[in-house]
Image (cartoon, rainbow, N blue to C red; front, side):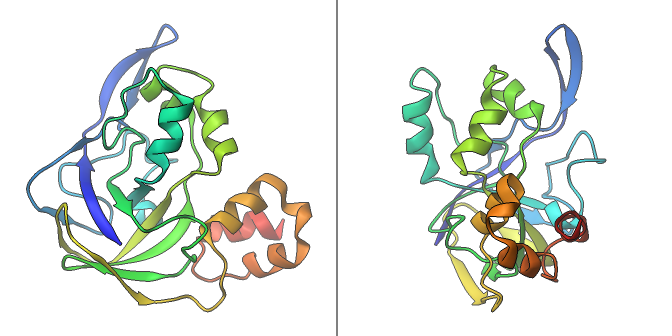
Length: 208
C-alpha cells in the first residue's frame, strides 16, 4: 500500500453553464512533504464547507488502479494525478478491501477510513461533462475519505501501514451499495446504521 501522489489546490472561480462557480476540485501533485491537519492539508481548501470538508472528510483518497478503467471510459481525456479531486492517489487501497473504521499510518500521520465519496456536480466541471457524476457513481469507483487521528507530514512514495482493522467488516463498497440500493440487504443496512466509525449523517440516513 503506497501513496504515489499528494495533491492539493485552493478554490478558484470557473464558468459552468453560464454561471460563475467557486470550486476546490482542481488539485495538482506536489513534490515536497506536506503537513496533514485535522481539517485538510496545507495548501488545500474546500470552496463550499456546507457539503465538503470537515473532520470526517479531511483527506480524500482515490485508488490509482481506477485510472485504467477511466482511460477506457474517457479515451480522449488526459488523466493527470489528482484529476478526481483527491488529496492522496494510492495503490493497494480499493473500496472493496478497506473497512469503514480501518486505521492507517503514513509518514507521521494516523488516519481512519470514514466514508465513500458521493460526487457532486463539480466533478462534472472538472471533466467538462455533466454526465460524469452519474458515471462516477455507477462505476462504484468512488474513493473514500480519511479522518485525521494524528497530524503529521506525508510525501509521495510513503508506505501506508494498516494499524487496526475494524471488526464490523463493513467495507467502503458496502456503504456505497447500500446508498444506491439499501433494500437489497436489510441485514447490512441494520449493521451500518449502528456503525460508530461511520459519520452520524450516514448513520441517520440508514436509520431512516
